[in-house]
Image (cartoon, rainbow over all chains, first blue to last red; front, side, top):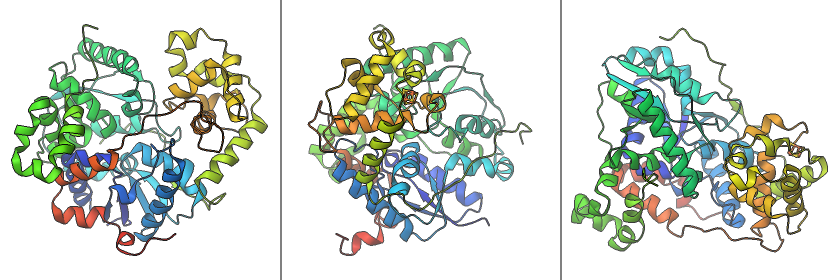
Length: 281
Length: 165
Ligand code: SF4
């Protein structure tokens, strides 16, 4: 058993329960004692630069709550949370813990992880790469090494690096997103990729639109690791994205009621219908 | 197991706070950048977001950086500077190309914060804020997690106590 950690999800990965549950399963299989925390009580506030009072409050609360979790190591899922903790929160609040990204932890434990990856995943994949969010963490290189441990999986050379450090910032600039997706799809087809592999939920959420429209299958790396461990999770967000306006019927009345019909109509259905790329544009 | 080696991972051992609170930190960064930036424009020249935009790529790099510095001084800034600030996606390529002890990525972020009127200056532009940001997070938690997981993972003990002021 290694050092107990706080596994810090952040907020928006909660769209992808399958990814969250797969991470928890992997950490458990690696015998890492991980206390899971996430949601607005642990929001880093990185997206709140236009409301600094709110951002400051989130930073204070999250520093307090992560300190109170009582573990010396915080492992972030989200690149935006990691960057905000490093660049802003820890420089303006006392923390009392060390910080790592989940990819670093998996990479460190890759020997044990390899022993758990027993099932073949026969797929040729291209990794969706951005610039590393922290120049001192060669994150995409580490993901490549981790994926290379999966039997049957071929990681293609790729070569195109999308601007920015994740897709969420590009999503507010449709022309940039359009150009980035065009290059990504073209390269994936050139190299004969059977799927595009995402690292972050911010990219997964956007790029699943490519899958939903039949341009290119999109898989998150954590779900591929879980599959190789014999744990299959369906990507439920993909089914919502594919259904788009039909997601309401797919969810059914009970889950619609749990979310609230007005919020579903106002915010979730438009998100499911949004697409990052129109090939004929 | 792969025999290839990567650079060993760096665990950030987070140091003690330099200032108290987020606003003070951004204010201090603002002053530091104004003190150190020589407006050499190397950061602009390597920026994939600037170079990926035809109008910005054709802009005079010095004028773009001068515009950012003017925003930090509380002035209007040049159109190029303001456009670059709004386009920054934090690729971070600039970081290794700055010869001074400052972070150009932070420079653009603080300039955005200043231009949004968040450090006491008149706002130069407005950003769209998602009023449903947290409503969506809660909604998705209800769709993807069990009630027990929501309680155990997403409710901080402090949320059950009176909030600190
Ligand atoms: S931030 Fe650094 S690289 Fe950019 S103009 Fe100033 S000194 Fe030059």
